[in-house]
Length: 124
Image (cartoon, rainbow, N blue to C red; front, side, top):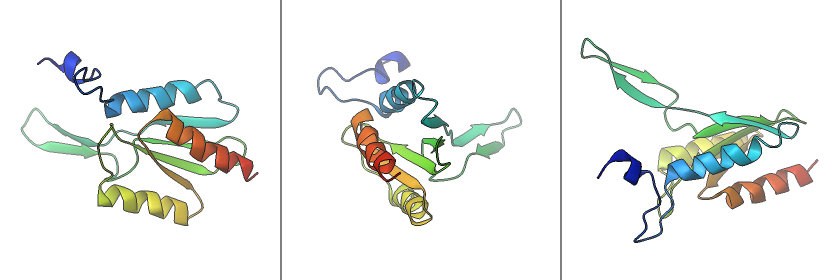
């Protein structure tokens, strides 16, 4: 199976992959820059030409980070494909964001984020 098919919706199970969740959130909120600024937060590792490894990003940090434009409140969104679970380290990171006054969101869809942000915007 080639990479293109792996990133597409699994037609047999109709499962939405994480990459599609991330993309839908970023595309939708790009329409509202006066309300929120969001960007992809990549983490991982890559092999160097000499055979070593370089890591980047903060472990367990959310897939999308940003801030509410009107208040500066930090936003972290951990995205998951349908049927996938938030890892304990990722949950702890989101909980820490929330404990410090930010908005940590676990999202399996754009609608999850819309609901959480609506509640946050209603606070102000």
